[in-house]
Amino acid sequence: MKSSWLSLRLLVLSLIATVLLASVSLGLVFNWVYENSIETVEDEQFSIEKDMLRSVVSTYELSSDKTDFLAAWRRPNWQLQVTSLIHFPLPPPLQDSLKAGDIVTLDSEEGVSLHLLSGTEVFSLYLPPSKVETSLQFGLTSLFYICLLGLILLWIYPLVLRLLVLRQSAQQFGNGNLGTRVEVGSHSYIADLEFEFNAMAQRIENLVEDIKLLSSAVSHDIRTPLARIRFGVEAIIDEDDQSSRELLSERIDKDIDDMLDLVEHMLDFSRLEKQLLQAESTQMELCGFIERLIEQNKTSEKHIEFQTADSAVEMCLNPHFIGMLTNNLLGNAIKFSQAKVKMSVQQENAYVLICVEDDGAGIVESKRVEILKPFVRANNSSEENGYGLGLAVVKRIVEFYRGELDVGESATLGGACFSVKIPIFK
Image (cartoon, rainbow, N blue to C red; front, top):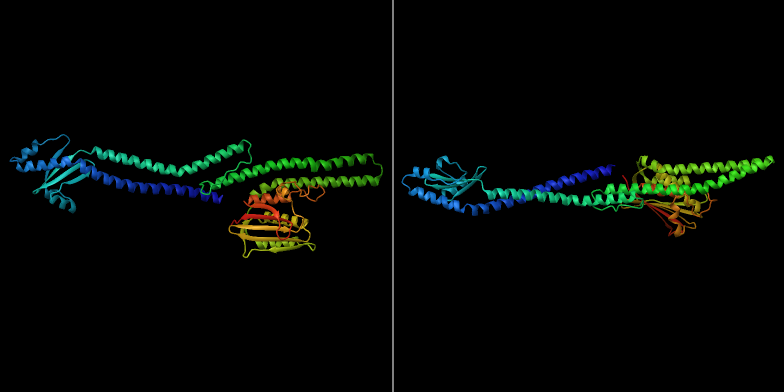
């Protein structure tokens, strides 16, 4: 949950950062384009007006009646005004340009004005707002938002693709293809969501397989003692000898106990998934914890060798289920070994590797996947103690901790080798 929350925060922050960075970058670029474009447009657009202003000033200077000249000068949408230089405040740089004989162009919300100094008087020609400038502003503004939208869509595109993949996988899974999984992208925005989907799909597939295997176990492991019980009851009815009747009664009691024990194991296994989801994890030192479990499982008949990591391995796990995993692997190795069992705990980068090896007969390659399923025994013998749930429990716990379980051959002892690889949670 914490990891998912962090991923969601990173997703939102990356979107905000993308929008801000794009806005600032595009704003600077388009501002530079606008300033350079408007200077070019003004130089080209107002060349006629500047020539006209110079012509008006020249004519004004030659005119004998200047007041009548100004009153008679009319142009549509243009206004000519003469102001004393003293009453015409300008910033020093613009005043210098004006005194140098240059035409100063000023832009405001009311429009554009051209100013030329003649003697001590400033001639001002006021023009209406430029349509070219307005069009340029509108075009650049529209282009800015289009580019901003494009960058946001470019950010959203990978997210939409991953969501479509997730949707397609969910549809396939809902149609009965329980083996459907999402390939988690290395740079996916919803990697946690994809992983949780895969974990959910795996749990559902495991439950469906468990139901099938449970049905098979019920039909075989329960039907057999039921048949014996039925045979024993019929034999008791027909038997007159008291001692024989008591012997048959004891056999029936034993078959009933075996059935109750099998049902209890089935119920425990069916509740394992729920218990794993509800279990609370605590910080623990794995090597010391496993070493204590080895001491509890030691026997005088079998030698157990334990190799630990060079340094302490701190992990956040549930002690009960890690203990169950260790005891099942260790008990299985002790059961099938001849004289020696070796267990090791090593840290490899962000993973911890737990290996349990024995010097027994080993497991043939064709059965190394099959024995990890519930109610499957290594030698398929109904006389073997247990119900074939130990390794299935180990597999379920390893999957819950996002790990891997591998069955192979021991390179040093020659028997079976069970390797558990679990990410280090802290």
